[in-house]
Image (cartoon, rainbow, N blue to C red; front, side, top):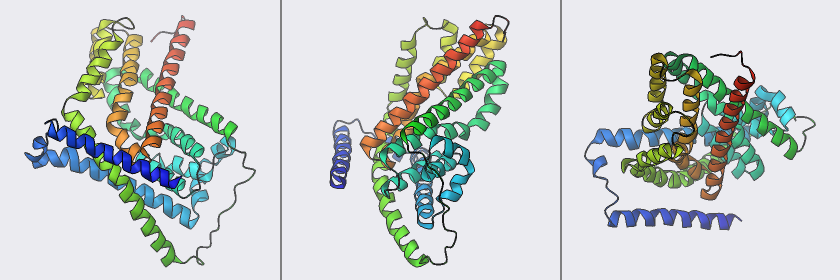
Length: 357
């Protein structure tokens, strides 16, 4: 199985190199815009890559250190009630806790546990889906201080709906894990006496394993990230955003509301909040219409953001096949939870005539 995985790895890498060679020969791979201005090269290429390498390195190192020193149970104790009810393993709980700090670090920990054979593929899938809950909170403070002043009550309702969607994802994964994972009668206390450990051997093994896995991940992350970067520079994502925004049409919401969706897709999502606030202040749209437009912009832009920002990480940390499957599952899961949360909110408003925004 390992030999087959290695073969697929080199086939995928060869495919990327072939695509780059063809693009260069037909003139589609223009690197002059990077070479002309060192500031552009630093901001668009070097700085983001260094950030990715930094967090992946931390995740790999922490995951391997936790496993080597037997600290998994100590980290997992923070969410012990969820572990017991959802039949979660200590490794899944440790990654879940780390995801509140960094999503990339948590993914690197998961793949480290998987490579060490202490997590199977089913547990990896559940752990990745479970981490969509803490990932919601990573940018929440910034989002709150941006959306509330700009979009007012509509922004507050939008945040409540997205929060409910995150809670819904957590509950669904816990129910799923409770039904597919075996019940754990007790959690074994991991040894606290580390004096008997051969620290030199532990660190030597840790270093060798860490460098090997980091190099293997970077071999995929670097070319995929650069490919996404060139696609972005060529205007592919601008075209894709326009196509998706136009495809929604004005049948689902007013034309004015569609402008919020388009602005959210074409620029930073903050611009969508600003446009929503302006229309709310002018009385062009009411609160429910603005909330619907913000949700639509979020849902439509999800696959684009995933393809642009998350694909290099997922395909690099996991195998290409496994990474693709996981990123598709997480995005579908996220979109469905937002749609369901929005639909339930509309139903509540419809069934409560006295409820006014």
